[in-house]
Image (cartoon, rainbow, N blue to C red; front, side):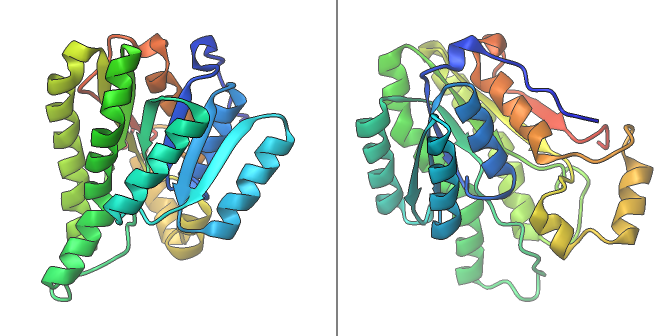
Length: 255
């Protein structure tokens, strides 16, 4: 089944910042927002992939800029955000997509590894929001989209710090939504199910996983990156003008 993409006229010429945009779900978000006519800035550590994606989309007449950036470097990330503001204009849509669901056990986690996992899965999102909120307030509003996960909702094993980070992202959404709502800034959590990205297919989706998905989802078929990108478009658009502090789950009806 072909996934259709709605057109949101108000997204044209909006400046959108997406973290982790060089591959996976993030790549599809970059493509989707650019196709709407938005001005898209995205960051990733994968320099060659990011440059290739930006060059491709710009060759199609779209407006996309890439910065190779480690989002766990708060100062470096803030500088990149400032450069996007200068070249693309004030950021009024923030998609905190970047994360790493690397598997880990309780036994192997030490303090340093804990801090690294929190930094890549939670901390950067908070400080990116802090950086763009003044722009949104000056513009009269905006939308912050935090990526959550159904993994912690299902009490999945194999990544306890990742699960804790994603649960915290939901809490951060609720807290920021209340604080920023008077400034017409909406904050929501976009919650993917098991999305069939290249990474997931290469590392974890085997026959047993496919059987589990088929048994667990209400809907047949696979949750694809474009399904997540489509929800991001809605949450960024004025079509979701009175949606804030909520979880928007795209998982085929698993949880």
